[in-house]
Image (cartoon, rainbow, N blue to C red; front, side):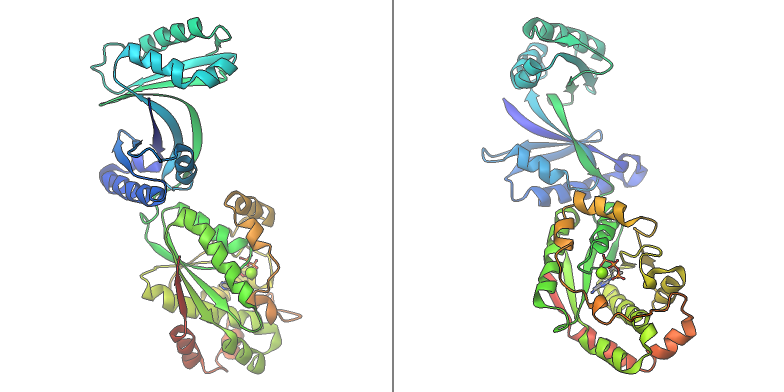
Length: 388
Ligand code: ATP
Ligand code: MG
């Protein structure tokens, strides 16, 4: 008996003429995600991707856990592959589903017949297979409304599949189907979640981190790289740009009014990020800001930050409470790393009384006290690039 994996596609199926391009991209992403598991045959038909292992070492459970992080898939099931012969289907259902069926009290059979040449229709498959299973498993009775086990039989073009276990997929759209953005990644809780949410909509990412050595330690940088590494499970390969930011921060501290330190600093971050984004063909910036979370995230402060760049700034967690963001960070495994206690460059030069209702022209006035072009160019030229 051969065990295989079936993946149900999400929104892609609504994509009219572009659908096959989306499917090809998803197959490519699946191939990459399973490359370390072993060789397999991957094909797509009728809103389902079928994955058939081609070597004995292919671990189905590891493959399922990897597939649960691939955007574009809404549900995953492990299934047994059968010839399209009813007595074979019955035999394999009894054998493959022996454990769940012998432990359950109630079940139902769900049949899907996309090959209309198959001699039995769906209600006949349900009735006859149900009868066979009742005979073999005396512990079982049928419950069509709320069964403990649902046995699914799919009659497709080449084979039939029998399954009962279903796993939730990550949903969303395949990475790479909706362009590219640059994520401003701090070591905090919010920015990895913001990146995850934008990636879920099919946007591929590169990350930019501002690093203020020696005010922030080597460990703080390692922590950000660890976060980016965790994100690659969902986002695929990513470039991380580490920007040396110490000199700009020191210049801000020396020249600008203290109450505007953070805003001036954030405008410099945005301008540098924009340059890097454009060099990478990324068409927007992503941050983990949420309205009112800190002084630099009031509506007027966000407007001052936005004004620094001409590409769009996306903030997927803008309307979320911290607790909601924490829930997602736990789900995507970044929480434990995010809460490790290393300083971020934002917190090093925090003013005692930051402006919460800044006026743009006064912030720009402070910003212009620095040798702007040269500082920005120097930071961009000295960026360290790490590929994860
Ligand atoms: P987070 O939890 O993501 O650190 P935060 O609530 O601490 O966010 P801020 O420190 O004000 O908020 O930062 C707001 C956003 O600015 C972050 O979500 C991130 O996108 C970006 N950011 C902050 N610090 C850095 C940094 N050192 N490098 C890159 N981006 C940063
Ligand atoms: Mg932060």
